[in-house]
Length: 83
Image 1 (cartoon, rainbow, N blue to C red):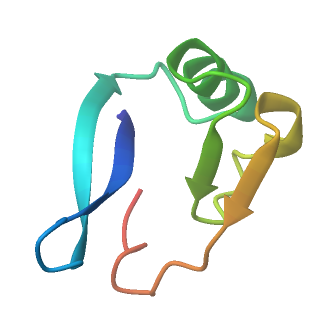
Image 2 (image 1 turned 180 degrees about the vertical axis):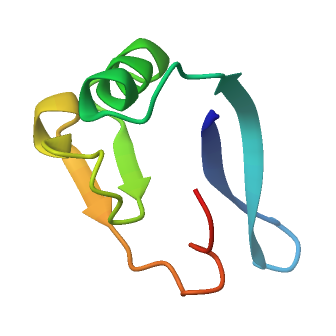
Image 3 (image 1 turned 45 degrees about the vertical axis):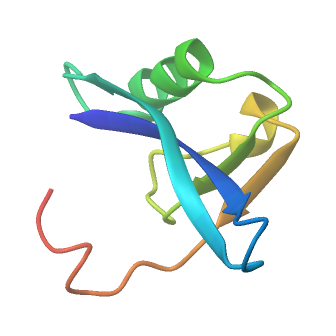
């Protein structure tokens, strides 16, 4: 299963408090988790000028070819448990 989610920062104009907002989700059952399948999902789901935030999954071979601003973050062992 692949999931793409849009996240936008919002500021409360009264308090100045910053929060995040989810604008959309896109989900798709992939036939496999090879790089080609994952990259095709990303390419079909987001624009080139998007900021792509991913875990360091090995399926993301070349995120810089998918978007202008890729950011990789380390997932905790608990979050990355399983397939």
